[in-house]
Length: 357
Image 1 (cartoon, rainbow, N blue to C red):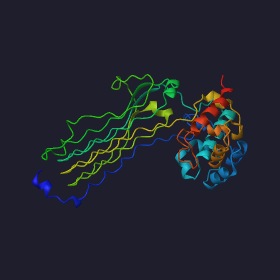
Image 2 (cartoon, helix red, strand yellow):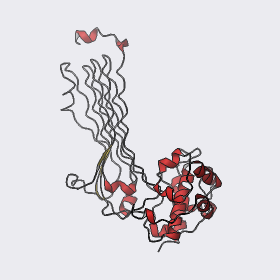
Image 3 (cartoon, rainbow, N blue to C red):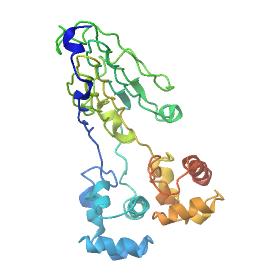
Image 4 (tube, rainbow, N blue to C red):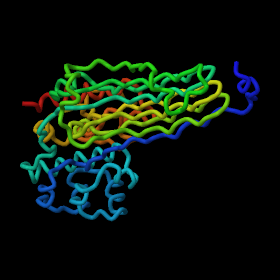
């Protein structure tokens, strides 16, 4: 062992972890409309709107407190704006459903979801950070997380293009203290993160597909240098884009920061976060959605009083509101159980089947 290493005091510590690189988060309007249709929407006071579509009084009071006197302005608002006003997930979903009911009543020719010119995806998982160099022990490469998607939904949406799993970070090098930070990772092997089961997608056309704006996740900061052990690379968080809009972008996950170098043990590479692609709990056509009348939650057949109470405690009142629920929305709600999303999906599917043509 080199003398310089033998003389190091292990109490000199470990390098600091690299900082988190946050991924971009895309949030569309509450109801997605073509901008040319917005000026056509008929005005109605917020009070009359809430009364007609049976929104709770606390929704009206909060909208009034925030200076929203006419419901037209809600078509220009996004979900984050409603959250900042203090609305919970159920109230936001009920407002969405009420706005769509208003369109169905007064503007049946306005399409809520903009038509897709294509549904060709280019989505890649995260890239793990490279492990740091250590004279005694190399740092491990970070994990490149794979995006998690439902194959049945991809088939139903006729998705084509490319979906790639995460790419693991290169392992660090060891045994040569003269290596510099610039070249320690260039010849290291790659470790590929395991991707989930996917439908038929063309994995060879990634460089051929012509996409729009490139959207990449954040890049974690490099771990700090330390004599005993290099710091762990920071997490590179993946972007968050609703499934409806994924086809508009070329989407890459986050990139984990490189592990810090050390005279003893290199730091581990940071985690490369996968893109988050939230989807509605049940996907139905806009035509079917407009045929569903105002219906209270009690009419749904899921026979679970605890689930019904949890939904009502969080602002849900109608079947239409539940149809605006995303699969991940309930995870952080107190009382959530792992099986609830599928229970709701099954109940909604049975209920909506009689309105499909």
